[in-house]
Image 1 (tube, helix red, strand yellow):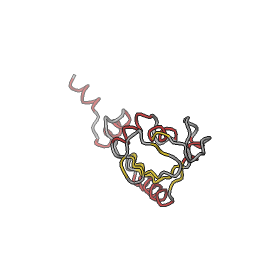
Image 2 (tube, one colour; image 1 turned 30 degrees about the horizontal axis):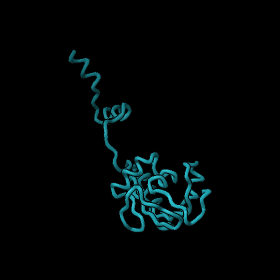
Image 3 (tube, one colour; image 1 turned 90 degrees about the horizontal axis):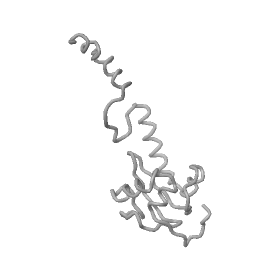
Image 4 (cartoon, helix red, strand yellow; image 1 turned 30 degrees about the vertical axis):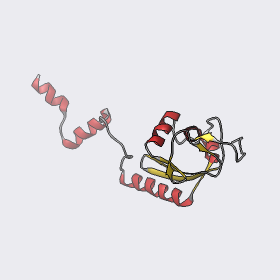
Length: 141
């Protein structure tokens, strides 16, 4: 956060990457193009400039952040330093924490979960249904 000057600007996708909202700039750019990031309440392009004081809304994995940019950093830093680049609204933080708490209590997976079950999941499913595919395959052979 060395660049505290209010005239300093940075591309939106680079800022999201440096602030650790996304692992790569490519993921940040895809989220921006998909309308998951709004600047001052409007859709933006990855090359849009942000500076201190800019308000952003970021939606990712069913969660939402309402933040204000506090600083610009040209490099990706540790999470504790990256957290100093923005300030989250208290209402936004409360909503997000409540949603995470509800997910934990209900045991619901994060939004977007799909794909094949793991070996562990498959064994649990077999135990639950009372079906063991290994014994039926041996019986046929």
